[in-house]
Image (cartoon, rainbow, N blue to C red; front, side):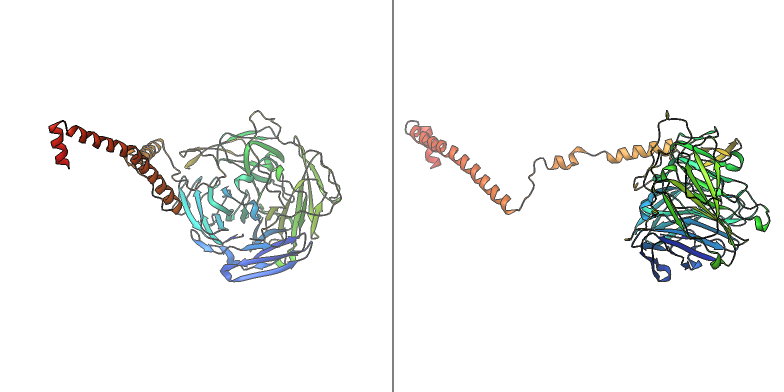
Length: 562
């Protein structure tokens, strides 16, 4: 299920890149436009339908039935490219089985130029209830400020958009049914002068990881800003550079690879890592090979074994494109089939290496059997539709659990030796065929570590289907009052309990078998009583009549009875 952030303009292109390993029939359903697109995709082929830009969401704080659903009869990959004017963005669409019910939102709020951070909530099922706990460093989201909540009931294909005047990183979203969460910004800059649109489909909390590799985008000389968001209190993030950061739930730290270099990080509790490539900063036109973008950084347990991507859009966009790929491998696993033109970079104090290359021919297919890696695409164009990045394929389902505080302090752990095979097949992610109040106190170190205080009790992130989370802003006084009210509400009078009322009552049962058994039991009891009492009654009467003949008073009494 897809939706798209409105970039303050309605021109440009919204394009889906749908690739199949085996022959697949793909259906795109757009109820808001009464459109159903169906196409057969051959093995190793890519379908690039261009959708109406009217599908970009712009009716904020209103549920709009504008989502796009993609289903397939066989596994496919779906990437989104959304370009407008001199800005563009994109993301890898998550398959249905990768979605869940709890998310932590991430955005980047540089200069805004009357544009704002945006959060899109997309329902895939009817009667979906979504709660949003707002965390803002400044500003507000409509009437909601930090620490407050809002609840929304959505149905399949509904999109609810939240527009905020401040950075909402750390905002918590929880629902009773799986949802899609798309986060980003209409137009902002990332440590540079030019502005670009940001959007990314977020992974749920149960897909957060413990170990990551942070790299510089190929084509950028100024590194990237990597935002690490905690899902638990007492989260300790350790970098291969020697830095250690302590975070509580919903807090984050930014690591700038331009300052600290490429590195590995690991944490004792699962975290989310989102990378922001930097805006161009006055470079000449022919040097603009990358602009601002945001993308998910997969944890090492989400590394894949193959990719297939056909990104070539120059003919559609009518402009030259500059696209590069970056691969990350464990140092124990040496890739054999990468182009000789790729640039090999060793990450110091980290057991992972990076291979970067420029791509001019499509499609790109890469697999070395069971060799695991992660790959990223960085796409830009000649002064037009700049800045789109996303990971290529991810291995979902390997949820991470917290590590012991006594675990090794090594930043990353190399993969175990993997056997190689010459199989050229590539595994693709599949779409279902069935379908706080907190304030900035200080920044410490050049990496931009932000400490926050909160008037809202820190809450652990849960992956369960919580039915209610109100009230979120709980003080000790309010908690005590609610506890007393709950206790009084739960107290019951013993005399009013059904146990007491029914103690001397028999439950009615009109079943024939029950009636028959009851009648037999009653007859048996009556017969037993009669059998015992009748002889005694007869004997008593005989005694009275016999005594009446000798005792006048008794005789008189008997005569009166007769």
